[in-house]
Length: 579
Image 1 (cartoon, rainbow, N blue to C red):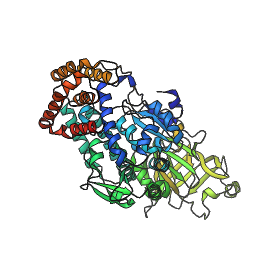
Image 2 (cartoon, helix red, strand yellow; image 1 turned 180 degrees about the horizontal axis):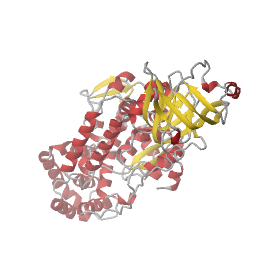
Image 3 (cartoon, rainbow, N blue to C red; image 1 turned 90 degrees about the horizontal axis):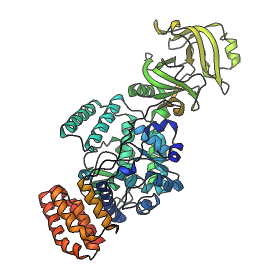
Image 4 (cartoon, rainbow, N blue to C red; image 1 turned 90 degrees about the vertical axis):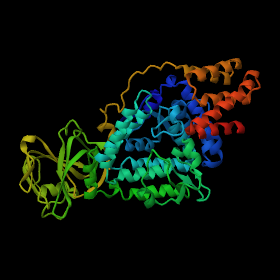
Protein backbone atom coordinates (compact mmCIF):
# COMPACT_ATOMS: atom_id res chain seq x y z
CA UNK A 1 0.00 0.00 0.00
CA UNK A 2 1.34 3.41 -1.00
CA UNK A 3 1.90 5.35 2.27
CA UNK A 4 0.67 8.59 0.67
CA UNK A 5 -2.66 6.99 -0.22
CA UNK A 6 -3.04 5.22 3.13
CA UNK A 7 -2.37 8.44 5.04
CA UNK A 8 -5.47 10.05 3.52
CA UNK A 9 -7.79 7.15 4.28
CA UNK A 10 -9.76 7.35 7.56
CA UNK A 11 -8.67 4.67 10.03
CA UNK A 12 -12.05 2.93 10.03
CA UNK A 13 -11.79 2.37 6.26
CA UNK A 14 -8.20 1.13 6.20
CA UNK A 15 -9.13 -2.50 6.95
CA UNK A 16 -10.80 -2.59 3.51
CA UNK A 17 -7.70 -1.49 1.60
CA UNK A 18 -5.74 -3.93 -0.49
CA UNK A 19 -2.56 -3.74 -2.55
CA UNK A 20 -2.26 -3.40 -6.26
CA UNK A 21 0.43 -5.90 -7.08
CA UNK A 22 1.12 -4.43 -10.45
CA UNK A 23 3.86 -6.90 -11.32
CA UNK A 24 1.33 -9.75 -11.11
CA UNK A 25 -0.72 -8.67 -14.12
CA UNK A 26 -0.14 -11.02 -17.02
CA UNK A 27 0.19 -10.29 -20.76
CA UNK A 28 -3.26 -11.81 -21.37
CA UNK A 29 -4.75 -9.42 -18.77
CA UNK A 30 -3.03 -6.47 -20.45
CA UNK A 31 -4.62 -7.56 -23.74
CA UNK A 32 -8.06 -7.80 -22.08
CA UNK A 33 -7.69 -4.25 -20.74
CA UNK A 34 -6.52 -2.94 -24.12
CA UNK A 35 -9.32 -4.59 -26.08
CA UNK A 36 -12.07 -3.26 -23.80
CA UNK A 37 -10.64 0.25 -23.60
CA UNK A 38 -10.07 0.50 -27.37
CA UNK A 39 -13.69 -0.51 -27.89
CA UNK A 40 -14.88 2.03 -25.36
CA UNK A 41 -12.64 4.81 -26.68
CA UNK A 42 -14.17 4.59 -30.14
CA UNK A 43 -17.79 3.82 -29.28
CA UNK A 44 -18.33 6.13 -26.33
CA UNK A 45 -16.79 9.08 -28.12
CA UNK A 46 -20.22 9.64 -29.68
CA UNK A 47 -22.47 8.07 -27.07
CA UNK A 48 -21.10 8.81 -23.59
CA UNK A 49 -21.46 11.92 -21.47
CA UNK A 50 -19.26 14.71 -22.76
CA UNK A 51 -16.90 14.34 -19.78
CA UNK A 52 -16.02 10.73 -20.61
CA UNK A 53 -13.28 10.89 -23.21
CA UNK A 54 -11.36 13.79 -21.72
CA UNK A 55 -12.04 12.31 -18.27
CA UNK A 56 -10.13 9.17 -19.20
CA UNK A 57 -7.00 11.20 -19.81
CA UNK A 58 -7.50 13.48 -16.80
CA UNK A 59 -7.99 10.54 -14.44
CA UNK A 60 -4.70 8.92 -15.45
CA UNK A 61 -6.05 6.17 -17.70
CA UNK A 62 -4.40 5.14 -20.96
CA UNK A 63 -5.54 2.61 -23.51
CA UNK A 64 -2.51 0.37 -23.78
CA UNK A 65 -1.79 -0.50 -20.17
CA UNK A 66 -3.60 -1.28 -16.95
CA UNK A 67 -3.55 1.88 -14.79
CA UNK A 68 -1.53 2.24 -11.62
CA UNK A 69 -3.91 3.27 -8.87
CA UNK A 70 -1.34 5.53 -7.24
CA UNK A 71 -1.04 7.46 -10.53
CA UNK A 72 -4.83 7.75 -10.75
CA UNK A 73 -4.87 9.02 -7.17
CA UNK A 74 -2.55 11.89 -8.13
CA UNK A 75 -4.51 12.69 -11.30
CA UNK A 76 -7.84 12.88 -9.46
CA UNK A 77 -6.60 15.28 -6.80
CA UNK A 78 -7.39 18.46 -8.80
CA UNK A 79 -11.04 17.33 -8.88
CA UNK A 80 -11.24 16.80 -5.11
CA UNK A 81 -10.96 13.03 -5.42
CA UNK A 82 -8.49 10.23 -4.88
CA UNK A 83 -8.25 6.53 -5.69
CA UNK A 84 -7.63 3.59 -3.34
CA UNK A 85 -7.12 -0.11 -4.05
CA UNK A 86 -9.58 -2.60 -2.57
CA UNK A 87 -10.02 -6.35 -2.77
CA UNK A 88 -13.18 -7.08 -4.75
CA UNK A 89 -16.63 -6.64 -3.24
CA UNK A 90 -16.92 -4.65 -0.04
CA UNK A 91 -20.13 -3.85 1.91
CA UNK A 92 -22.27 -1.17 0.26
CA UNK A 93 -22.15 1.22 3.22
CA UNK A 94 -18.34 0.98 3.19
CA UNK A 95 -18.18 1.65 -0.55
CA UNK A 96 -20.39 4.71 -0.05
CA UNK A 97 -18.29 5.83 2.91
CA UNK A 98 -15.17 5.85 0.74
CA UNK A 99 -16.98 8.01 -1.79
CA UNK A 100 -18.28 10.33 0.93
CA UNK A 101 -14.61 11.02 1.71
CA UNK A 102 -13.83 11.70 -1.95
CA UNK A 103 -12.09 8.34 -2.46
CA UNK A 104 -12.88 6.06 -5.38
CA UNK A 105 -12.44 2.38 -4.36
CA UNK A 106 -10.86 0.43 -7.20
CA UNK A 107 -10.84 -3.36 -7.26
CA UNK A 108 -7.38 -4.49 -8.31
CA UNK A 109 -8.45 -7.71 -10.07
CA UNK A 110 -9.25 -7.74 -13.77
CA UNK A 111 -11.82 -9.90 -15.55
CA UNK A 112 -10.72 -13.02 -17.37
CA UNK A 113 -10.65 -13.34 -21.14
CA UNK A 114 -13.68 -15.65 -20.85
CA UNK A 115 -15.66 -12.81 -19.20
CA UNK A 116 -14.23 -9.96 -21.24
CA UNK A 117 -17.64 -8.58 -22.27
CA UNK A 118 -19.01 -8.38 -18.72
CA UNK A 119 -18.39 -9.67 -15.22
CA UNK A 120 -20.60 -9.20 -12.13
CA UNK A 121 -17.46 -9.07 -9.99
CA UNK A 122 -15.87 -5.66 -9.43
CA UNK A 123 -12.69 -5.25 -11.44
CA UNK A 124 -10.29 -2.53 -12.49
CA UNK A 125 -11.97 -2.09 -15.87
CA UNK A 126 -15.26 -1.28 -14.19
CA UNK A 127 -13.90 0.85 -11.34
CA UNK A 128 -11.16 2.72 -13.19
CA UNK A 129 -12.45 2.77 -16.77
CA UNK A 130 -16.10 3.15 -15.79
CA UNK A 131 -16.31 5.26 -12.62
CA UNK A 132 -13.28 7.54 -12.80
CA UNK A 133 -13.77 9.51 -16.06
CA UNK A 134 -17.13 11.12 -15.23
CA UNK A 135 -15.86 12.16 -11.79
CA UNK A 136 -14.00 14.90 -13.62
CA UNK A 137 -17.40 16.56 -14.14
CA UNK A 138 -17.88 18.86 -11.14
CA UNK A 139 -21.64 18.40 -10.76
CA UNK A 140 -21.47 14.61 -11.12
CA UNK A 141 -18.66 14.45 -8.56
CA UNK A 142 -20.87 16.44 -6.18
CA UNK A 143 -23.68 13.93 -6.68
CA UNK A 144 -21.45 10.93 -5.96
CA UNK A 145 -20.04 12.51 -2.79
CA UNK A 146 -23.52 13.51 -1.62
CA UNK A 147 -24.75 10.00 -2.34
CA UNK A 148 -21.80 8.58 -0.41
CA UNK A 149 -22.55 10.62 2.71
CA UNK A 150 -26.20 9.53 2.63
CA UNK A 151 -25.72 5.94 1.46
CA UNK A 152 -23.19 5.22 4.20
CA UNK A 153 -25.97 5.74 6.77
CA UNK A 154 -28.47 3.33 5.18
CA UNK A 155 -29.68 0.48 7.39
CA UNK A 156 -29.88 -3.02 5.95
CA UNK A 157 -31.14 -6.34 7.32
CA UNK A 158 -29.31 -9.45 8.51
CA UNK A 159 -30.62 -11.33 5.49
CA UNK A 160 -29.23 -8.72 3.10
CA UNK A 161 -25.82 -9.02 4.72
CA UNK A 162 -25.96 -12.77 4.14
CA UNK A 163 -26.80 -12.10 0.48
CA UNK A 164 -23.78 -9.81 0.22
CA UNK A 165 -21.46 -12.47 1.64
CA UNK A 166 -22.88 -15.12 -0.72
CA UNK A 167 -22.55 -12.75 -3.69
CA UNK A 168 -18.94 -12.06 -2.78
CA UNK A 169 -18.15 -15.78 -2.61
CA UNK A 170 -19.78 -16.44 -5.98
CA UNK A 171 -18.07 -13.52 -7.74
CA UNK A 172 -14.68 -14.64 -6.41
CA UNK A 173 -15.25 -18.18 -7.64
CA UNK A 174 -16.39 -17.04 -11.08
CA UNK A 175 -13.14 -15.16 -11.63
CA UNK A 176 -10.90 -17.77 -10.01
CA UNK A 177 -9.24 -19.96 -12.67
CA UNK A 178 -8.85 -22.73 -10.08
CA UNK A 179 -12.57 -22.96 -9.25
CA UNK A 180 -14.65 -25.85 -10.60
CA UNK A 181 -18.15 -25.84 -12.13
CA UNK A 182 -19.38 -27.76 -9.09
CA UNK A 183 -18.03 -25.13 -6.68
CA UNK A 184 -19.72 -22.42 -8.71
CA UNK A 185 -23.03 -24.33 -8.73
CA UNK A 186 -22.87 -24.73 -4.94
CA UNK A 187 -22.20 -21.00 -4.55
CA UNK A 188 -25.07 -20.17 -6.92
CA UNK A 189 -27.46 -22.34 -4.92
CA UNK A 190 -26.31 -20.71 -1.70
CA UNK A 191 -26.91 -17.25 -3.16
CA UNK A 192 -30.37 -18.25 -4.38
CA UNK A 193 -31.21 -19.56 -0.91
CA UNK A 194 -30.01 -16.38 0.80
CA UNK A 195 -31.87 -14.20 -1.69
CA UNK A 196 -35.11 -16.08 -1.08
CA UNK A 197 -34.87 -15.19 2.61
CA UNK A 198 -34.18 -11.48 2.00
CA UNK A 199 -37.77 -10.41 1.44
CA UNK A 200 -37.74 -7.07 3.25
CA UNK A 201 -37.06 -3.89 1.28
CA UNK A 202 -34.72 -1.93 3.54
CA UNK A 203 -33.16 1.50 3.23
CA UNK A 204 -30.01 -0.17 1.96
CA UNK A 205 -32.00 -1.99 -0.75
CA UNK A 206 -33.76 1.13 -1.93
CA UNK A 207 -30.69 3.32 -1.98
CA UNK A 208 -28.69 0.60 -3.73
CA UNK A 209 -31.35 0.64 -6.44
CA UNK A 210 -30.97 4.40 -6.75
CA UNK A 211 -27.21 3.93 -7.05
CA UNK A 212 -27.58 1.13 -9.59
CA UNK A 213 -29.91 3.03 -11.91
CA UNK A 214 -27.80 6.20 -11.77
CA UNK A 215 -24.09 5.77 -10.97
CA UNK A 216 -23.95 2.26 -12.45
CA UNK A 217 -26.54 2.22 -15.24
CA UNK A 218 -27.59 5.82 -15.74
CA UNK A 219 -28.41 7.72 -18.93
CA UNK A 220 -28.65 11.50 -19.16
CA UNK A 221 -30.19 14.13 -21.41
CA UNK A 222 -32.81 13.69 -24.08
CA UNK A 223 -35.11 10.66 -23.81
CA UNK A 224 -34.80 9.92 -27.53
CA UNK A 225 -31.02 10.34 -27.76
CA UNK A 226 -29.58 10.03 -24.26
CA UNK A 227 -25.93 9.78 -23.40
CA UNK A 228 -24.28 7.23 -21.13
CA UNK A 229 -22.70 8.08 -17.78
CA UNK A 230 -23.24 4.89 -15.73
CA UNK A 231 -20.04 2.98 -14.94
CA UNK A 232 -21.65 -0.41 -15.52
CA UNK A 233 -22.44 0.59 -19.10
CA UNK A 234 -19.12 2.35 -19.67
CA UNK A 235 -17.23 -0.81 -18.69
CA UNK A 236 -19.37 -3.44 -20.45
CA UNK A 237 -18.63 -3.88 -24.16
CA UNK A 238 -21.86 -5.70 -24.89
CA UNK A 239 -24.32 -3.76 -22.74
CA UNK A 240 -22.62 -0.43 -23.32
CA UNK A 241 -23.14 -0.77 -27.04
CA UNK A 242 -26.59 -2.34 -26.91
CA UNK A 243 -28.19 -0.14 -24.24
CA UNK A 244 -29.11 2.62 -26.69
CA UNK A 245 -31.04 0.20 -28.89
CA UNK A 246 -34.82 0.86 -28.99
CA UNK A 247 -35.39 -2.62 -27.52
CA UNK A 248 -34.09 -1.29 -24.18
CA UNK A 249 -36.87 0.83 -22.71
CA UNK A 250 -35.90 4.39 -21.74
CA UNK A 251 -37.83 5.78 -18.76
CA UNK A 252 -37.72 9.36 -17.45
CA UNK A 253 -35.94 9.40 -14.10
CA UNK A 254 -38.32 9.44 -11.14
CA UNK A 255 -37.18 8.76 -7.59
CA UNK A 256 -40.15 6.63 -6.49
CA UNK A 257 -40.09 4.57 -9.67
CA UNK A 258 -36.36 3.97 -9.41
CA UNK A 259 -36.32 2.77 -5.79
CA UNK A 260 -39.09 0.28 -6.62
CA UNK A 261 -37.20 -1.13 -9.61
CA UNK A 262 -35.12 -4.17 -8.69
CA UNK A 263 -32.23 -5.36 -10.83
CA UNK A 264 -30.31 -8.50 -11.69
CA UNK A 265 -26.53 -8.08 -11.91
CA UNK A 266 -26.18 -11.23 -14.04
CA UNK A 267 -28.42 -10.14 -16.93
CA UNK A 268 -28.68 -7.17 -19.31
CA UNK A 269 -31.07 -4.54 -17.99
CA UNK A 270 -34.44 -4.44 -19.82
CA UNK A 271 -34.94 -0.74 -19.03
CA UNK A 272 -32.82 2.26 -18.14
CA UNK A 273 -33.62 5.61 -16.53
CA UNK A 274 -32.76 8.92 -18.17
CA UNK A 275 -32.16 11.90 -15.87
CA UNK A 276 -32.45 15.49 -17.05
CA UNK A 277 -29.12 16.50 -15.53
CA UNK A 278 -27.01 15.78 -12.46
CA UNK A 279 -28.81 18.47 -10.46
CA UNK A 280 -31.94 16.31 -10.69
CA UNK A 281 -30.02 13.42 -9.11
CA UNK A 282 -28.66 15.56 -6.28
CA UNK A 283 -32.17 16.76 -5.48
CA UNK A 284 -33.50 13.18 -5.63
CA UNK A 285 -30.97 11.67 -3.22
CA UNK A 286 -31.59 14.50 -0.74
CA UNK A 287 -35.33 13.84 -0.97
CA UNK A 288 -34.74 10.15 -0.33
CA UNK A 289 -32.57 11.01 2.67
CA UNK A 290 -35.57 12.78 4.23
CA UNK A 291 -37.24 9.34 4.51
CA UNK A 292 -34.26 7.61 6.09
CA UNK A 293 -33.90 6.78 9.77
CA UNK A 294 -30.89 9.04 10.18
CA UNK A 295 -33.24 11.98 9.60
CA UNK A 296 -36.50 10.59 11.01
CA UNK A 297 -35.23 8.60 14.03
CA UNK A 298 -38.06 7.29 16.21
CA UNK A 299 -39.30 3.80 16.91
CA UNK A 300 -39.30 2.78 13.25
CA UNK A 301 -35.66 3.74 12.94
CA UNK A 302 -34.75 1.75 16.03
CA UNK A 303 -36.58 -1.30 14.72
CA UNK A 304 -34.59 -1.06 11.50
CA UNK A 305 -31.38 -0.95 13.53
CA UNK A 306 -32.34 -4.05 15.51
CA UNK A 307 -33.24 -5.91 12.31
CA UNK A 308 -29.89 -5.00 10.76
CA UNK A 309 -27.83 -7.04 13.20
CA UNK A 310 -24.92 -4.72 12.35
CA UNK A 311 -23.26 -1.81 14.12
CA UNK A 312 -25.62 1.16 14.20
CA UNK A 313 -25.97 4.42 16.09
CA UNK A 314 -28.99 5.81 17.95
CA UNK A 315 -28.97 9.52 18.78
CA UNK A 316 -30.99 10.61 21.82
CA UNK A 317 -32.65 14.02 21.87
CA UNK A 318 -30.02 15.12 24.41
CA UNK A 319 -27.36 14.61 21.72
CA UNK A 320 -25.97 11.39 23.22
CA UNK A 321 -24.93 8.92 20.52
CA UNK A 322 -25.00 5.19 21.32
CA UNK A 323 -23.13 2.94 18.86
CA UNK A 324 -23.32 -0.85 18.94
CA UNK A 325 -25.28 -3.85 17.72
CA UNK A 326 -28.82 -3.32 18.95
CA UNK A 327 -30.54 -6.55 19.87
CA UNK A 328 -33.60 -5.57 21.90
CA UNK A 329 -36.22 -2.86 21.83
CA UNK A 330 -39.07 -2.61 24.37
CA UNK A 331 -42.25 -0.77 23.43
CA UNK A 332 -45.33 0.47 25.29
CA UNK A 333 -48.92 -0.47 24.51
CA UNK A 334 -49.00 2.06 21.68
CA UNK A 335 -45.90 0.52 20.10
CA UNK A 336 -43.61 3.41 21.04
CA UNK A 337 -40.02 2.54 21.97
CA UNK A 338 -39.31 2.88 25.70
CA UNK A 339 -36.07 0.95 26.24
CA UNK A 340 -33.13 0.24 23.92
CA UNK A 341 -30.42 -2.38 24.42
CA UNK A 342 -27.18 -3.09 22.57
CA UNK A 343 -25.32 -6.38 22.95
CA UNK A 344 -21.56 -6.64 23.11
CA UNK A 345 -19.05 -3.78 22.81
CA UNK A 346 -20.82 -0.43 22.73
CA UNK A 347 -19.52 3.14 22.72
CA UNK A 348 -21.06 6.46 23.70
CA UNK A 349 -20.30 9.69 21.88
CA UNK A 350 -21.36 13.29 21.46
CA UNK A 351 -21.13 15.28 18.20
CA UNK A 352 -19.21 12.44 16.58
CA UNK A 353 -16.55 12.17 19.29
CA UNK A 354 -16.36 9.30 21.75
CA UNK A 355 -16.94 10.38 25.34
CA UNK A 356 -13.91 9.83 27.58
CA UNK A 357 -14.38 6.68 29.64
CA UNK A 358 -17.24 5.40 27.48
CA UNK A 359 -15.55 3.36 24.78
CA UNK A 360 -16.06 -0.28 23.85
CA UNK A 361 -13.63 -1.41 26.54
CA UNK A 362 -15.85 0.13 29.25
CA UNK A 363 -19.17 -0.99 27.75
CA UNK A 364 -17.84 -4.29 26.46
CA UNK A 365 -20.84 -6.24 27.74
CA UNK A 366 -23.44 -4.02 26.15
CA UNK A 367 -25.54 -1.01 27.05
CA UNK A 368 -29.23 -0.44 27.78
CA UNK A 369 -31.26 2.62 28.69
CA UNK A 370 -34.80 4.01 28.85
CA UNK A 371 -36.26 6.40 26.28
CA UNK A 372 -38.88 8.91 27.34
CA UNK A 373 -39.97 11.43 29.97
CA UNK A 374 -40.01 11.09 33.71
CA UNK A 375 -43.41 10.60 35.27
CA UNK A 376 -44.94 13.74 36.84
CA UNK A 377 -42.32 15.98 35.22
CA UNK A 378 -43.42 18.20 32.36
CA UNK A 379 -39.85 19.27 31.56
CA UNK A 380 -37.79 16.63 29.68
CA UNK A 381 -34.75 15.46 31.62
CA UNK A 382 -32.37 16.66 28.89
CA UNK A 383 -33.55 20.22 29.56
CA UNK A 384 -32.82 20.09 33.29
CA UNK A 385 -30.25 22.43 34.78
CA UNK A 386 -28.01 21.61 37.75
CA UNK A 387 -30.50 23.59 39.82
CA UNK A 388 -33.32 21.32 38.65
CA UNK A 389 -31.38 18.25 39.78
CA UNK A 390 -30.78 19.81 43.21
CA UNK A 391 -34.40 20.91 43.48
CA UNK A 392 -35.64 17.34 43.00
CA UNK A 393 -33.02 15.78 45.24
CA UNK A 394 -31.21 14.00 42.43
CA UNK A 395 -27.69 14.57 43.70
CA UNK A 396 -24.50 12.50 43.79
CA UNK A 397 -24.01 9.92 46.55
CA UNK A 398 -27.72 9.74 47.27
CA UNK A 399 -30.16 7.02 46.37
CA UNK A 400 -32.33 8.09 43.48
CA UNK A 401 -35.60 6.61 42.27
CA UNK A 402 -36.64 7.57 38.72
CA UNK A 403 -39.97 6.48 37.26
CA UNK A 404 -40.63 6.98 33.57
CA UNK A 405 -44.05 7.53 32.00
CA UNK A 406 -43.53 4.19 30.24
CA UNK A 407 -43.34 2.32 33.55
CA UNK A 408 -39.58 1.74 33.44
CA UNK A 409 -38.02 2.42 36.86
CA UNK A 410 -34.39 3.15 37.74
CA UNK A 411 -33.26 2.93 41.37
CA UNK A 412 -29.67 3.27 42.60
CA UNK A 413 -26.99 5.51 44.09
CA UNK A 414 -26.21 8.37 41.73
CA UNK A 415 -22.47 8.84 41.25
CA UNK A 416 -22.40 11.71 38.76
CA UNK A 417 -24.13 13.46 35.88
CA UNK A 418 -22.33 14.09 32.58
CA UNK A 419 -23.17 17.44 30.99
CA UNK A 420 -22.41 18.72 27.49
CA UNK A 421 -23.22 22.29 26.49
CA UNK A 422 -24.94 22.71 29.87
CA UNK A 423 -27.30 19.78 29.11
CA UNK A 424 -27.26 16.39 30.83
CA UNK A 425 -26.27 13.38 28.72
CA UNK A 426 -25.72 10.55 31.21
CA UNK A 427 -26.52 9.60 34.77
CA UNK A 428 -24.14 7.08 36.36
CA UNK A 429 -25.40 4.75 39.11
CA UNK A 430 -24.00 2.05 41.34
CA UNK A 431 -26.10 -0.60 43.07
CA UNK A 432 -28.70 0.02 40.40
CA UNK A 433 -31.87 -1.89 39.56
CA UNK A 434 -33.81 -1.22 36.36
CA UNK A 435 -37.25 -2.78 36.00
CA UNK A 436 -40.12 -2.84 33.55
CA UNK A 437 -43.35 -4.56 34.61
CA UNK A 438 -41.32 -6.44 37.25
CA UNK A 439 -38.89 -7.70 34.59
CA UNK A 440 -35.28 -6.90 35.53
CA UNK A 441 -33.44 -5.03 32.80
CA UNK A 442 -30.37 -4.38 34.94
CA UNK A 443 -29.32 -5.67 38.38
CA UNK A 444 -26.78 -4.37 40.94
CA UNK A 445 -24.42 -7.33 40.45
CA UNK A 446 -23.89 -6.26 36.84
CA UNK A 447 -21.81 -3.30 38.03
CA UNK A 448 -22.04 0.36 37.04
CA UNK A 449 -25.18 1.49 35.21
CA UNK A 450 -24.98 4.45 32.82
CA UNK A 451 -28.41 5.80 31.94
CA UNK A 452 -28.83 7.75 28.71
CA UNK A 453 -30.79 10.98 28.91
CA UNK A 454 -33.32 11.64 26.17
CA UNK A 455 -37.05 11.93 25.66
CA UNK A 456 -36.77 10.73 22.06
CA UNK A 457 -34.39 9.09 19.60
CA UNK A 458 -33.99 11.64 16.85
CA UNK A 459 -31.65 9.77 14.49
CA UNK A 460 -30.63 6.19 13.73
CA UNK A 461 -28.00 5.27 11.18
CA UNK A 462 -25.66 2.49 10.10
CA UNK A 463 -22.14 2.53 11.50
CA UNK A 464 -20.61 4.24 14.51
CA UNK A 465 -20.79 7.86 15.63
CA UNK A 466 -17.00 7.99 16.02
CA UNK A 467 -15.85 5.33 13.54
CA UNK A 468 -12.17 6.15 13.98
CA UNK A 469 -12.31 5.08 17.63
CA UNK A 470 -15.00 2.42 17.34
CA UNK A 471 -13.30 0.46 14.55
CA UNK A 472 -9.72 1.17 15.60
CA UNK A 473 -9.11 -2.52 16.31
CA UNK A 474 -10.89 -3.85 13.21
CA UNK A 475 -9.18 -6.71 11.42
CA UNK A 476 -8.51 -6.50 7.66
CA UNK A 477 -11.62 -7.30 5.63
CA UNK A 478 -9.59 -9.37 3.20
CA UNK A 479 -6.96 -12.01 3.82
CA UNK A 480 -3.76 -10.15 2.94
CA UNK A 481 -1.20 -12.70 1.89
CA UNK A 482 2.11 -12.14 0.20
CA UNK A 483 1.29 -13.40 -3.26
CA UNK A 484 4.13 -14.00 -5.67
CA UNK A 485 3.67 -13.21 -9.32
CA UNK A 486 2.14 -16.19 -11.12
CA UNK A 487 4.32 -17.86 -13.70
CA UNK A 488 3.44 -17.01 -17.26
CA UNK A 489 1.69 -19.64 -19.32
CA UNK A 490 2.71 -20.44 -22.88
CA UNK A 491 -0.20 -18.30 -24.01
CA UNK A 492 1.02 -15.37 -21.88
CA UNK A 493 4.42 -15.58 -23.60
CA UNK A 494 2.79 -15.36 -27.02
CA UNK A 495 0.73 -12.34 -25.96
CA UNK A 496 3.85 -10.65 -24.60
CA UNK A 497 5.70 -11.32 -27.84
CA UNK A 498 2.96 -9.63 -29.86
CA UNK A 499 2.94 -6.72 -27.44
CA UNK A 500 6.69 -6.36 -27.87
CA UNK A 501 6.26 -6.32 -31.65
CA UNK A 502 3.58 -3.63 -31.38
CA UNK A 503 5.89 -1.53 -29.24
CA UNK A 504 8.83 -2.18 -31.62
CA UNK A 505 10.86 -4.22 -29.15
CA UNK A 506 10.72 -7.38 -31.26
CA UNK A 507 10.87 -7.91 -35.05
CA UNK A 508 7.81 -8.82 -37.11
CA UNK A 509 9.59 -11.83 -38.59
CA UNK A 510 8.42 -14.06 -35.75
CA UNK A 511 4.69 -13.45 -36.44
CA UNK A 512 4.17 -16.70 -38.47
CA UNK A 513 5.82 -18.73 -35.69
CA UNK A 514 3.55 -17.11 -33.09
CA UNK A 515 0.44 -18.08 -35.08
CA UNK A 516 1.70 -21.67 -35.43
CA UNK A 517 2.23 -21.85 -31.67
CA UNK A 518 -1.19 -20.32 -31.03
CA UNK A 519 -2.88 -22.96 -33.17
CA UNK A 520 -1.04 -25.62 -31.19
CA UNK A 521 -1.76 -24.45 -27.62
CA UNK A 522 -4.96 -22.34 -27.94
CA UNK A 523 -6.78 -22.97 -31.23
CA UNK A 524 -9.91 -21.14 -29.95
CA UNK A 525 -8.11 -17.96 -28.86
CA UNK A 526 -9.54 -15.06 -30.84
CA UNK A 527 -7.98 -12.02 -29.16
CA UNK A 528 -4.35 -12.70 -30.06
CA UNK A 529 -5.39 -13.33 -33.67
CA UNK A 530 -7.05 -9.92 -33.65
CA UNK A 531 -3.88 -8.34 -32.28
CA UNK A 532 -1.81 -9.98 -35.01
CA UNK A 533 -4.31 -8.80 -37.60
CA UNK A 534 -4.09 -5.29 -36.16
CA UNK A 535 -0.32 -5.38 -36.67
CA UNK A 536 -0.77 -6.67 -40.22
CA UNK A 537 -3.17 -3.81 -41.00
CA UNK A 538 -0.81 -1.19 -39.57
CA UNK A 539 2.59 -2.33 -40.88
CA UNK A 540 3.65 -3.30 -44.43
CA UNK A 541 6.10 -5.96 -43.27
CA UNK A 542 6.03 -8.89 -45.74
CA UNK A 543 5.63 -11.46 -42.96
CA UNK A 544 2.51 -9.68 -41.72
CA UNK A 545 1.04 -9.11 -45.19
CA UNK A 546 1.32 -12.82 -46.03
CA UNK A 547 -0.25 -13.72 -42.69
CA UNK A 548 -3.32 -11.51 -43.06
CA UNK A 549 -5.57 -13.81 -45.20
CA UNK A 550 -4.93 -16.72 -42.86
CA UNK A 551 -5.78 -14.65 -39.77
CA UNK A 552 -9.00 -13.42 -41.37
CA UNK A 553 -9.98 -16.97 -42.32
CA UNK A 554 -9.30 -18.35 -38.84
CA UNK A 555 -11.30 -15.55 -37.20
CA UNK A 556 -14.21 -16.18 -39.54
CA UNK A 557 -14.08 -19.87 -38.71
CA UNK A 558 -14.15 -19.05 -34.97
CA UNK A 559 -17.19 -16.81 -35.53
CA UNK A 560 -19.04 -19.71 -37.09
CA UNK A 561 -17.97 -22.41 -34.65
CA UNK A 562 -18.21 -20.25 -31.50
CA UNK A 563 -21.34 -18.03 -31.74
CA UNK A 564 -20.57 -16.48 -28.33
CA UNK A 565 -17.43 -14.96 -29.86
CA UNK A 566 -19.15 -13.45 -32.87
CA UNK A 567 -19.80 -9.95 -31.50
CA UNK A 568 -16.35 -9.77 -29.85
CA UNK A 569 -14.58 -10.64 -33.09
CA UNK A 570 -16.74 -8.37 -35.23
CA UNK A 571 -16.25 -5.46 -32.86
CA UNK A 572 -12.51 -6.02 -33.06
CA UNK A 573 -12.58 -6.12 -36.86
CA UNK A 574 -14.64 -2.96 -36.98
CA UNK A 575 -11.95 -1.18 -34.97
CA UNK A 576 -9.39 -2.09 -37.63
CA UNK A 577 -11.49 -0.19 -40.14
CA UNK A 578 -11.58 2.85 -37.84
CA UNK A 579 -7.85 2.90 -37.02
